[in-house]
Image (cartoon, rainbow over all chains, first blue to last red):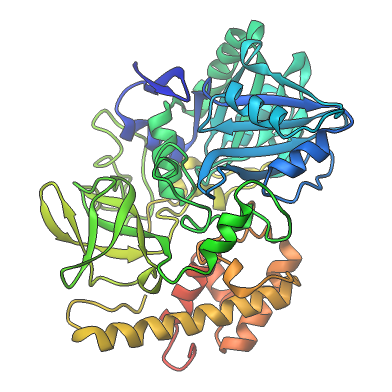
Length: 390
Length: 108
């Protein structure tokens, strides 16, 4: 196990080779310890008004509904990646990119004198576990009930023993976050690993989850979110409203009018690409890389067999041949006029030299989850198309 | 996907290709705004916005309306994309990719 730090919390970076964890998640299901994810419970008569002043999304939510949004600095840059949910008693905030205590202070500071507001940081009393993968619903169904596996996307439900389940994933696969009382964490973890073993459960650290998010074209606050970007830069306008005022809204309005705007765009290129590398057209710098990682892509393969000792690449089923791997994928921040997929006139200046790249549409993968529906009999995993087809 | 590659000469070819891609993207944005009754400005719809799950949160009825409207606007058989390659309707950009890859004259 290799450890790292996220939002001031020690968390597991990887249990082994990141590639194996990525392939395990993409193939079947992965379990993760998400101790760094902050969970706040916001209560009181003024909870809606306070959160509505602070958050950039429209906050009219049905009971059990979840909405992804962000928290902005006054200059419009992203401070935290948030999901906000409500049930009949509280609002819930799930946060990455900012320590929960700091987020709680931002929420309290948005209150006005006389507001009825209670903000509880559940960090000391609860843990967060993640279950992601094309058959994550099957594991959740075995853990609780088949109905919970079929929980709608971006919905929240209460399970037995004080467990709260949020369905939502950045990996492009089925995904669930379980908020578990710390007193039950070990028991829940052990039960999930026991139930998941026959399903091919993999343990995945945050590096595999963040790589899967990059592959899926999802925002990663620990990567591009650390480079001072606004929702306009990283194509997250769907998470913010133009029809309300909130911290950062004036800066976003000004940014929309700027002629020198940039926008994120997917790239495929050499393996050595790294955040901060310059993107060049005819010797003119037209952007920089916001995030980068290895390309585990398999080109021309229809199916893949079980993950073998040498790792998934090279362990193909009978129907395909391995041609991918060795390159890199990246998210580039390009001059708006040039921020389009389908161009291979650009180069990237890496530590190893200048190399040609090709802009592509995200996501970089074709998820197996597209081929499966909770509650329906699923085919054998080894006969399903493997995701890396693009 | 139709691409502008190193064999294409000069910036004029690149500019022309980008103009063609933006024209198709504008058509996709207009279709989505009309079909979903979004009440949004076109530039609010980022090209990589997810269509399902998060993002625009299309449901099955929206999808049917979108497919019919795209077929009418661009003269292509969108429904065949999903049959042959599930997931091609994932973002505005993936729709544009497939429209540009359609037979010449189908997406102009």
